[in-house]
Image 1 (cartoon, rainbow, N blue to C red):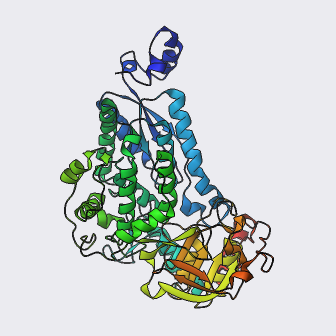
Image 2: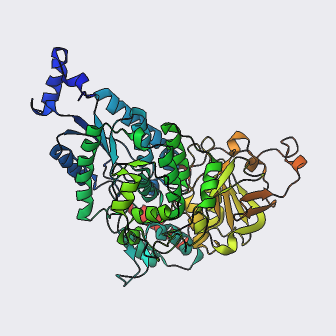
Image 3: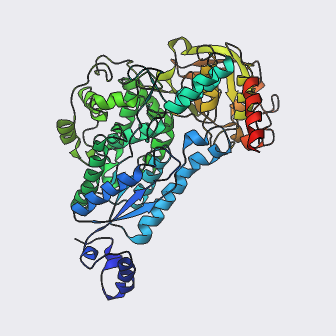
Length: 564
């Protein structure tokens, strides 16, 4: 079998190349084997990534057992939770492209024959996917797995906690419904292990979608990070990529139009993050099977919502693992005739996958297709005169009372301005918070708005206040929050023309956002767009933000003085 790595291993002209590989410790015997990249995003700061060294060693063992020679390659990663609500969030989404570029450079530069990708969080998964599609070699994905959830005080079972508990808690402290001591307890316990955050947030959504796309083994998205089963999965991933190499199956043979269809169906069924719309759309484009917002809207209309995990419901991701994981969801979609069975997976054909990897839904964590939580998907596309090119909302995380809401606009030209107002108690029930100039160009970088959405929840306003933004949301965001509004304000979108007090209707059921202003009044000459103030970042803020409760500001100032 002719291999890509022949370009660096074979023939007299390649003696220098072999010498460099021998400097890595390779033997002549190993130089006769395929060379496999193990693309690892392990680092010390992201809790979803600090266990990836163990995953990597297991993957390499699997590759070696199956006759390949593994080489670990490192890439960057950004933790969205740590990057949230300060200058760091400008760098989060763009890191996806940096990761894709680094994958392409490393694989093409060294003529690898195949690759195993070890991501876990947010932009790392789609970044590696985009890079893998560019080089189109046999590729398998295996994530680091989700963390275990935390628990309420004195409880080892029952209600669980997660990172969202802290973001909501900051708003509750500001509202006086939670003490700083209670918040400290959750700070210490809500993220109890390594792994990606324990709900169906962006990281876990993307890792589950890797299964739906067919490029990961069953369990990739749901086996907890701390379970030994995760290490066995990693070894099998290493062995599986060698099988794909032997069969000549590359990633574009798997990520086809059928695979994209199946991923969109699964996303709607298990209620993934709104960020999946960004990522899967980019992945589909790179794979040569582009999709549009109309395609997302159609998927939502035909797909039942089968799973309600945090933030849509109270259950952590481990509950889906306990009943069979993503394969159970795919089984139900298959029973409903919603899967494209022409899709190929790392397990074989879709029929083979469904026959060998699935079982019926339990009816509680995962509903049956004929008894769903909702007859339509968890995500909803909205249009209207505020968003001519569309916006997206996680409908499954919206209280039914807020599926239709009309109220006066409260406009802010940055996330920081909005947070100041929310935490200061200046947002009233009934308001529609508008945060603009946070889109891809306006941010720049399309920042996530988890802090303001969680603050609204924590302040007890999620059943009376809607939020619109040309930025995006964390997978943990919940409530009537519509993001990705396009065109963005920086591109001259109508969102830039909204003024305080304008009446806006957010009709999630009807799929529309309507600004109740006459069309002739919306001309820029009549109603100039807002002007963004000079860039304000958390780094420029006072050392203690003014919206913190007075007792908190006083304590932080004291601690800072003592530290000096």
